[in-house]
Length: 350
Image (cartoon, rainbow, N blue to C red; front, top):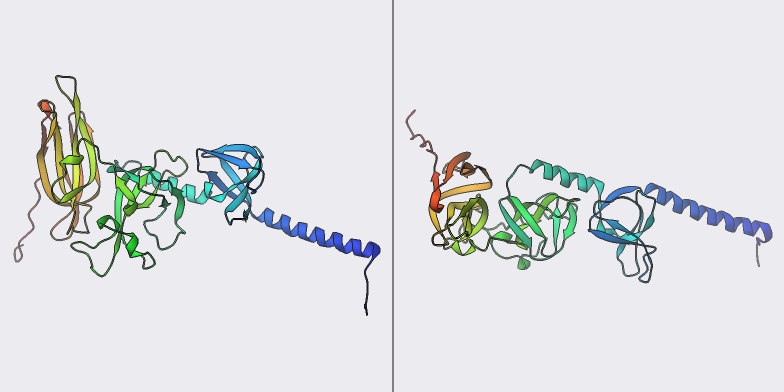
């Protein structure tokens, strides 16, 4: 038996009320989602919907400031966002192509902090990797964006952090990814991190990347002059010398580190000069020094003369800056003067 029945205008009224309520809830959700973000790719097509067969309604370019209106996942689970640009154009694109304004501001602030630090070396990503705002991978909360394989980076600093237990150790290898060396705890695995500048990423110009996914792009003319049992960790160009035959070559300051048994407190344990000889068109090593040092190495050249400053770790474990003078002489010769280091006071004497 039917207890009551709604019909006619009453039923129509309820249907309209329900529809209005759903619309109000939907509008409320849209109104509260007002996230400012920036476009990361060089060019990005804006689509009319999240469907596979959909029309392109516009194009965005890197650095464009947009507002995210709504978020949803497509049928295959891909996250999409509905955005609106400064001209009022609205459309859909995958969320991975955008980065929030607060993340952009942090990356740009970092870039400003390291603006005056010389590049310590160049590198390229060996695979797709995450650009982070801090040197750790405990979670992905610090991820700014994902960089494609082959992305060129300028390395300005290096850090070492304990590897999270959640990371599969089988996927890592080598000292760059965290093997313990001299001075390290053999029961703790460590990750190497590089602080980098990204010249081709105006939106996200700086951040941290996992060292195990970076291949150093050592200049071809000096890569074969690495010391036995060591690897090149950084390099800076001192200057260029020209020969009588119009050929030229560059002098380099090179930072090296032991391949095995290195002191984990240091980024490098040897510095040396690779000087180009225009007469032989080859390199020689006029200066070498065994020193535990940390990045960054600060090089300042004024014509044929200059200095480079190292932050070194002494035998007592204390850190201090020491400055070397360098002079580029005729005939491809390079002269380096090492500073006079104060001798540690002997025990029992004042």
